[in-house]
Image (tube, rainbow, N blue to C red):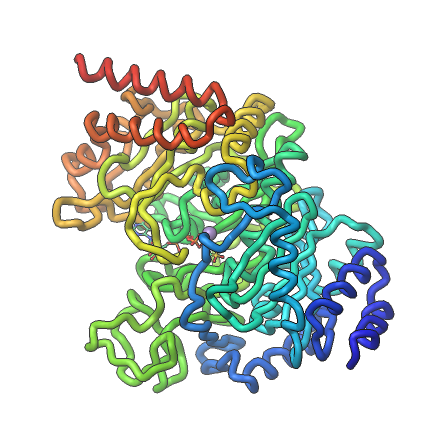
Length: 601
Ligand code: GTP
Ligand code: SPV
Ligand code: MN
């Protein structure tokens, strides 16, 4: 069809003038052969699955063992988020801040326009309307993604609420986030993920992978939404939302911010150790990656998960570490870059037990585990509907969300950070979040295992100046009558041989229970220079082989390491110049003083 015919077709189907005008511009730019409006109906989606299979974009897996499941292999050069090619394109460079890459909007538009020009030749443009958050909730926001990838459409269908119902909700409003995506040539040199916060626009080109292209997720729900939250007085965070039910049947909710591939999905779905299960403890998953939080009329913070599915890390997921995640992936799931077991056409990844003998690796090559090479990519993932999760919280669809008792920050630290500590108050908690650091993982392109500062686990996701973001946290805190308490955890402390000391996974509940007791002022604590720590006897070791001495070691605060940490934080803070909130500067000074006093003891 000609561009004009396509435009007429769009105008006939879409009554929202803002939407049709924008789509028409995108058609003129990318020149697709066909345009399809995604209504979200099952027959339409099924036809797309068939088309993707016919085109070799997806492989249908064993439908008896894994009904509705597919395998997708991304391009070999396109397996993770590309932070180096991700830009915040605000008018002023200082609004992007020192931790983001910045391009002036007009430069970004003209650079990417050249790449988008004719990029959909011979292809179909899919118009995918989606809602972040349950439709009709005051928290929810609408996005439209224009994409030439069926994989993206089918993944967005799992991750969000998608289709005609979203257009009905949108009506004639101009309030929607405009996302344009083309896989183009998958060229690494021309890969760009650009955000235009002043235009509520996202342009992504030359990638077909996860966070680069499922525009509702990191691009909208964090980078654009953090800007909206700043303007509108709420928070968009890289956090799990989890409910812990006690034997009395009361459920308390916590939010936890860990950097990518540092344990959010696992925390969200954990199964209590047997001893606690028998007593009646249960865990409810509200979200595993993103939380939008607002100040409620009751002066508390309320959180919703804007997503409707999980884009979870496959390696390491097994019967023991995360049975709920494994069960979640048994139907209607798309696997990306895992091993294909050719004997029964199922999937496998490292950590899932014995490797299949007759298998293809993530690149689709014949693979033998004895080669020593990994079969699944370390950042291979599953895209699974939230409704599949055995412990999904009924509150996932509650328009007002859940009230939050506590925040947990954490990361991967082989040494410095103890198993858990509590901040002294909200301001100190914001300091603790701002000073977070973690070892890098395979979730983003680049070296793995390098410690970097990752404030609030938002380093790659905050869509504006991090200094302003910290100030926003301070401001939100002071508007709360009942601010959540703020904690820090580290499941990843290692011994001298590099083994994890803490068992982690379900046993992390032992730490969460102390945290919840603190939130309800039911547990005591010991004051250290970094904050409050539990008394050894207050973390239950029932049913664990760990000794009290090991727990003491896990909680040990080494003043020399923390002195180094303070220096590093100071250097990091320097980058922000006068954008660094005064309150955080004084938090750092007080922290340094507490460390100095400790030394003279
Ligand atoms: P993103 O989806 O990238 O944001 O990651 P995430 O924070 O949800 O990470 P996820 O829960 O998928 O965990 C990533 C990796 O860390 C997996 O390989 C897990 O097996 C491992 N992991 C998670 N929790 C723990 C834990 O408590 N201890 C240890 N040792 N490993 C863990
Ligand atoms: C992360 O990297 O934090 C993820 C995966 O959750 S992605 O959607 O690729 O960002
Ligand atoms: Mn994430």
